[in-house]
Amino acid sequence: MAVAYTVDKIRRMESAAMSVLGEHALMQRAARSLALIAAAELRSRRGSVYGSRVLIMVGPGNNGGDALYAGAQLAGRGAVVVAVSCLGAPHAEGLSALYRAGGRLFDLDHLLARTGSDDSWDLALDGVLGIGGRPGLPDPVSRLADRLQAGGVPIVAVDLPSGVSADTGAVPSRAIKATRTVTFGELKPCHLVEPARGFCGQIDLVDIGLDSAAEQPDLESVDRDELARGWPYPDARSDKYSRGVLGIDTGSEQYPGAAVMSTAGAVHAGVGMIRFLGAHAAAQIIQAQLPNVVFSPGRVQAHLLGSGWGDREDGRAVLAQLAEGDVPAVVDADGLRYLPERAPASWLLTPHAGELARLLGTDRTWVSDDPIRAVRTGAERTGATVLLKGATQLVAVPGSATVRVALPGPAWTAQAGSGDVLAGICGALLAAGVPADRAGQLGASIQALTAAQHPGPLPPHELAQRLSATIGALQPNRSEPDQMVSS
Image 1 (cartoon, rainbow, N blue to C red):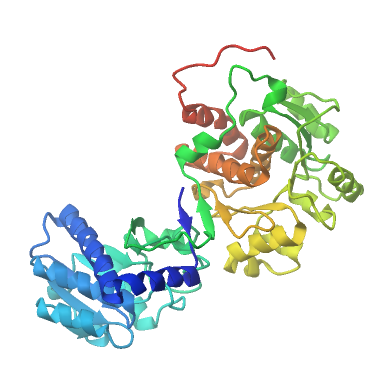
Image 2: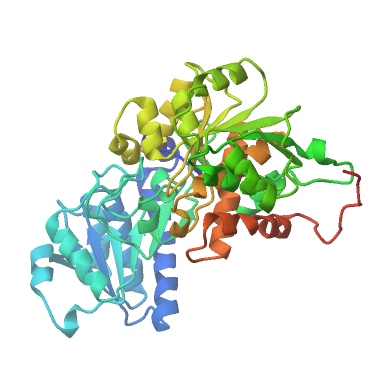
C-alpha cells in the first residue's frame, strides 16, 4: 500500500524533522539519495558516471538546492556538471558546493542560444520547482525542456516534475515530463493521480527521516498483493449464498446493452448468484448469453441499479424504497439522477466526471481540475460512498479524509460500456460482503489489471470474460484447490 500527503502535511513533517536534524542535514540526505539514483541512471545508459555530461535545471528553492548538492557529488565522481538558472537566484550554499566540485553555472538565455555537440547531455536533473511551486512553466523553461526531450535526454525530477500541481495531480499548462522522479519522505498526490502521474516516470521514494505518524494520509493506493488479499475468494465452506446474491435492475428497452455488460461484469467477477430484474429486452439477451442468471425476485445481499435506465418515471421511487432498507447498492449512470436527498453510506455511487459535476451542480472542469476535492465533496453531499471513474479512479467515504486510489490501467478502457462492467464487478463485491469503499477500489483495480494484461481495443464485454482468469491467477495459495462444495 502506498499513501500520499498534501503539501501542508509534508511541510509539517519537514519542519519537525528540521527541528531535530537541521535543514542542512535533511537536504544532504535528499541530495545523497538523488546523486546515487542519478549515478545509477548514468551507469545504466552509458556505462559510467565518469566523463558524463549532466545538466541541472535549478530554481530558487530547496529543490534546486538538492539538485545542486547532488550535482556536486556527481562532479566529484568525474561528471561534467553544468547548472542553468531557470528561475530566481539559485540556492547559495548548493551553488557554492557545485563550484567547489568544479561545476559551472549558465544563464538560461545563454544556454538556449548554444547549439552544437557541446550542448549534448547524458542526463538532466529537474530542480526548477518544488512542492510549493505554482503549476505551469515559463516559456524559456518550456523551450529548454522541449529541447532536452527532442534530444532524448533522460530527466530525473527532484521531488516532482516542475509544472505539475503537487496536491491535485493537475497539469494545467506546460510541465516537464520526467523519465524518473525521486521524491523524499512521503509521496504527494501528484505521484498517484493523473495526469501528473504520467509526467513522473519511474518513481523512487527516498526515506530522509520524516515522521508521518501524526498525519492522516490524503490518498491510499492498492497494489497487486493487497488486491489479492482483499478479494473475497471462496473457501471450502462457501456456497452461492455466502458468495453473494446480487439483484440487478439495469438496462431498458432502449438501452439493453448496459444490462448485458453490467450482468457480465458481475458474473465474471465471481458473484454467487444474480437475480436479474431489469428490462425485458435485456433479459432476453442475457438469458441467451448467461444461462446461470436467475430471472425472478427474491432475497439479495446487494443491489445494482441505474446503468442504461434512460428516462425512468419510477426511478426516484425505486431508489427511495431501497434507501429505507439496509441492503447495500451500486447506483450507476442514469440512476444517479434519481438519488434520494441523503443516500446510505453503504451505497456505492459510480459517476464519471460529467455525472459527478451534474450531481454537484457544477461544471466538469471543477471536477477534473481537482478530482480529490470533487470525490470528497460528492461523498459528503450525497451521504454515500463515491467511486469517481476516470484516468485515476478515486473512492471517498463520508466523514473520511483519506481517499482510496485504484490500480492504474491502460487508456484502452475509456470506451462505452466499461463503466457498466465496472458497476457489475462492484456489485458482486458488495454482495460478497465487501464494504463499499473497498468494493470500489478493488473493483476498479481488477478491471484495470485485466485490461493491462490484455492491451488493445478489447470491447468491454470481452474484457469482462477475462476477469475470471485474472482473479484466479491472483488467488493466494492457489496451488491448494478448495474442496468441492454444494451449490
